[in-house]
Amino acid sequence: MPTANPLFEEALDHARRIAREIAAVHAPAVDRDARFPIESIAALKEARLLSAPVPASHGGAGFSMRELGQICATLAGACGSSGMVLAMHYIQVACIARHLDGSKLFDDYLREIVECQHLLASITSEVGTSGDTRSSICAVERADGRFKLDKEATTGSYCAHADAILVTCRRDAGAPKNDQALVLVRKADTLQLQQTTTWDTMGMRGTCSPGFSLKSAGDEAQILPVPFGDIAAQTMVPYSHILWAALWSGIAADALARAAAYVRGEARKNPGTTPHTATRLAEGHVQLQSMRHNWQAVADEFDGITDRAELLSIGWALRMNQLKTSASDTAPQIVHRALQIVGILGYKNDSPFSLGRHYRDTLSASLMISNDRIMAKSASMLLVFKDE
Ligand SMILES: Cc1cc2nc3c(=O)[nH]c(=O)nc-3n(C[C@H](O)[C@H](O)[C@H](O)COP(=O)(O)OP(=O)(O)OC[C@H]3O[C@@H](n4cnc5c(N)ncnc54)[C@H](O)[C@@H]3O)c2cc1C
Image (cartoon, rainbow, N blue to C red; front, side, top):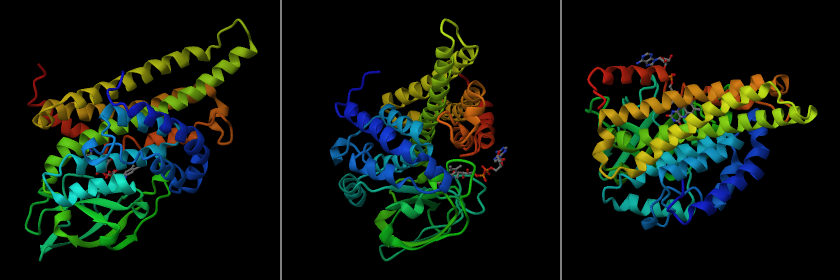
């Protein structure tokens, strides 16, 4: 689809170059050593891609959801962890950009993101909330224009490498668990960020997402002025599910591209014949096309929404849930199909057709906000929703 933003084609070219020349080169080491993809992130900063979601009014590129998704998918095809870090960062930037509500501090901070290419992380998880992002145990305390916030996180991606973390918590000590606020904790406000668990996982190893014990204090104005419930529904959930679906499709596309290269090699060995694996390749492309069209259609729909109240409707919430569960189920299926095509060369870690990292990375998709949890919410919504 043609893009209206004149900056986009150049940005996508940068993303393609970074994917090809940097992310792909370091991806095996990032995966093997479970280390942060420093080279990819440094290159993204240099290309000024970290401020892509910041509106033009604040000096950013102001890219649409569709455009951000294409950038994430491009990078993820080369290195799933790099793509995931970028997507998670974009989600946080969007939470600030879309919910400033006149705050001078956040207005200035958005411009600072553009100027300094800050990297933002997120802590929604908490020991004791069982993966439910919409409930918190910890609470932010306010006194004399300052805040104090301590949180025990079960999972926090690249927190040790980020310039700031957006942290969910209860609005105050008397608030119920779902009455939450979102707080910007910059490096300067972090009194303690102590790693409490390890991150030796099957996949997405470069996201470096162990548990953390966070202690922080700062200016009270760093608490976003809008309740987290609204930020979640209008921004965090749509940006997460759409950008994640985009990047998972990028990983699946690269797996299928490796399978296609293998099939073409087989065809060259026997000119005039079509290898039987080509049929599996064709089947894989059917799945990839629906996966791509699904996230792109939802992204376009999101970009076309002018009244944010629509994002609070049951119909929209169901579409978000359906996109997430379907993309996270389909991505590993496509990689599995690619593996059946390539065979042992895909199973080997040291072959150019290797698919191990793609497989392991996409297996995180159904767990990252558990599909069962999402399906249970959809099931209860469907009891009252009439699709017209
Ligand atoms: C790669 C990766 C990066 C991450 N990065 C971050 C990050 O940066 N910041 C952050 O805060 N978190 C992060 N997370 C954590 C993520 O957001 C979730 O909190 C976490 O994956 C959910 O953990 P869980 O499976 O223990 O929890 P749960 O969702 O509670 O799931 C536990 C089990 O209960 C089942 N279950 C749960 N609810 C229901 C239900 N209603 N009906 C039926 N079954 C149910 C699930 O299927 C599962 O089997 C990351 C996770 C991954 C995989």
